[in-house]
Amino acid sequence: MSLDALREEAREYIDSHCPPSMRNRAVHFEDAFEIYDTKDADGWRDAMAERGWTAPMWPKEYGGGGLSFEENQVLQQEMLALKALPPSVGMGLAMIGPTLLEFGTEEQKQRHLPPIVSGKVRWCQGYSEPGSGSDLASLQTKAVLEGDHFVLNGQKIWTSGADHADWMFALVRTDPNASKHDGISFVLLEMDQPGVTVKPIPLISGSSPFCETFFDNALARRDDLISELGKGWTVGKRLLQYERSATAVESKKKEKPLNPYAVVAKQYLGEVDGKIADADARDKIVRQTMLENSLKLTVRRVSDEGKSGKAPGATTSIFKLVGSTVAKESSALKADLRGMQGIGWEGEGFSETEIDATRGWLRDRAVTIYGGTNEVQMNIISKRVLGLPD
Image 1 (cartoon, helix red, strand yellow):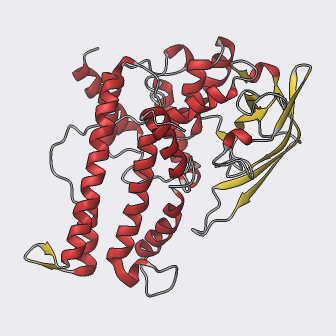
Image 2 (cartoon, helix red, strand yellow):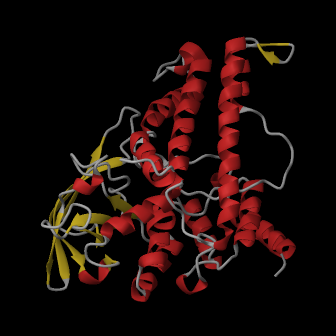
Image 3 (cartoon, one colour):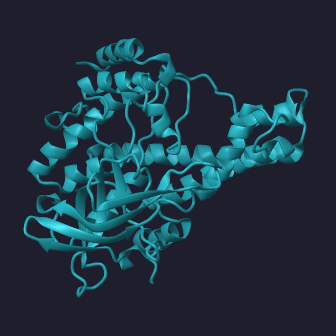
């Protein structure tokens, strides 16, 4: 099929299957479950999964769409043009799925990938522990092999979406006598079992997307060990590289979009002759916009270089470092431009948009911490990208 024919087919299919409630809105992981736990979301996901378009570049034998890089760009452009939300989101598609494609056995791929494509199974990540965040390799959750199962005991923390997840991929210590990196293995386990306890953690933003997860003789199947015993650190690092990588999608439309900061500034600070009245605000907006555009262009360049299908590397830490900083500063700038109206938590003096923006600003204070702190990313860049000595 030609790209033009695919474009026409994709446009018609998306427009006829994506309901209005799944268009013209943004999704943050803190509210993703609320958005995607609806009848409309289920129908949208099922329709796209039928075509393999929830995971368009995954092989067809695992339920994916089997599209090439160029074909996927066409599909994503049509999604963008119709302002359609992704039909499915989560750690299954972004993290464990690509990792299984690289490291999993054929049996593991056949068993785990199709349910991810269909959206029937949700995943969470068991990495960080109390005292083992930045120094993740010091983790202490133990897994002892007994027959056909690993028996897990220990605790994970900041487990995003654990209270909604069906499965977890986790780093566990299988050899306490080996060096801290070599004694770690990568396993998969079901969340709905007596040995797993999940406790959500309330955040300053008012939501509880993170959880504490406790293992008390929890079980993971022996055949759900990914790669080899003691090779979990290698698998775990690659998974994080998949998480931090991104594919840029360039809209086929060429009209210039409105600058969101300028819109806010003109509303709250006023304008003179079409310009934002406050010169300092203008300067801040220009700097932030230039940084965001530079990041987009860099991601697009790296994405073009990765058309060969090569797995992401340590340079993805640059995207995590800059991307999280941009997101944090974006929310802070919008709050600053609103003045006193940018710090409203509740009450008649604030609009719903202003209250949502305040909660978003508080929520985004954490983006430079979760998923690997900025300090950790700078260490990775120093060692793995720049080749600096320890």
